[in-house]
Length: 486
Image (tube, rainbow, N blue to C red):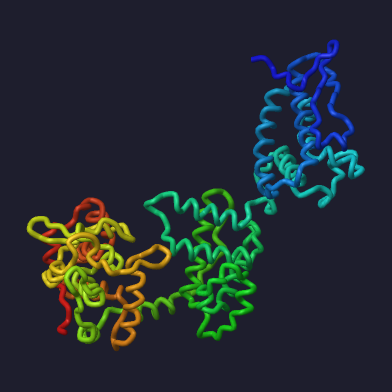
């Protein structure tokens, strides 16, 4: 392949470098064309030198453009990678050690050379920190790192925390099977926004245990309702702290603090895999043992008296095609073990039959074992009689929340109703009542898990028996469930 001659011109026996000067640079350089003697008669050598001079002058012309929109970290990374490629090319092309050394020196000169005369320096070694514009300094540092063979990117040129956090969330959403819910994404974004303010958007690698624990201490001073204001996204962490004014009882719970720390730990683990950081995470979750005990107690199974009281107070107000959610949703939960969102998402087409057994077909869910079939309890047959012939079983539910869940608004309504009953718990606790019944009836755990939608434990049944119980065997388990006398 013939060498490129874009910048070459033969005069006599020697090759010259020639390049047009852009109009914006002509007033400064006072010429329209650059012409330089390359002092060689070999066209291949001349081409190499011409490319190096072209890069040098292109950098000089760039000085007359508007300041670069790229961040110094981006300039460092791109220049570092491109310089490594050029170094490999120089090593292959320049066999003579002296020629190779000169070519490497020119790499740095391309970036800082135009500034030397302006600064009154003779070579790049005289340049002091702060002498160069930030983009030029980043490029020069990248060239020097590449020439030294260093793979360690200085902290000031690593990606900012916000850039890394944004990339993390994008990566987490690529796989539809492992995609985060909108609610989880919103919670993580809030955590990352606060932590960005705390470290002034420095690189994640600059975070140590001290700065991580200081952040958790700051979060602990926030009011537990800080995120409800629509102005939250426009307020910095310092502004939120200044307006917190929270008594100890109104501050973030230990469980909520642990959730914030968990988000940062997930980001750290991802960044380790990408080589952005190294070592153990500096983020340590607060002690949640006591908080978890309190939460478990608050989410305990319902007492029989509380269930009976609820159904005495909430009468069935269903009409044809419109089952009453307040009455039938708890009934379905107690007689199937299904989650609230699973029940709210049921459609008429999800009611199927096999081997003479009618069942709910649950095609998706929050956990690996959520995809399952659950037989319809005999006490739920009246629901099927009044349910719509097509569409959702509960058509009058209004979706809400970040993920537009059908259970969002009715779940809040249940929360208000349950607080008025002694011995009541949460809607999710109905699943604990089902589990409690199975255990008292001595049902083995790997069987009850196929009703409740948990992953079967162990290798024998979890891997070697993926199909599990038959639909009739499941129907026998469902028949064990009951609703306390109303």
